[in-house]
Image (cartoon, rainbow, N blue to C red; front, top):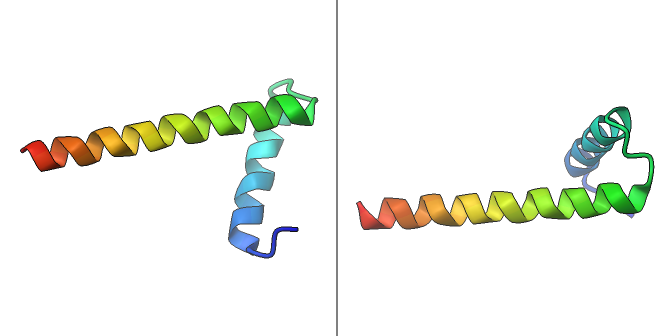
Length: 54
């Protein structure tokens, strides 16, 4: 159970976006959220490396 209300509201907001976009299956939405999280981490790591190399 999520106790962090900020995180819960962000997840609920994201779920609403998936739902309105046609993702009715929660498993599909979880896969997409995981993929988006991976891409965000990859982007952050790239930005961090770019800052170090400058």
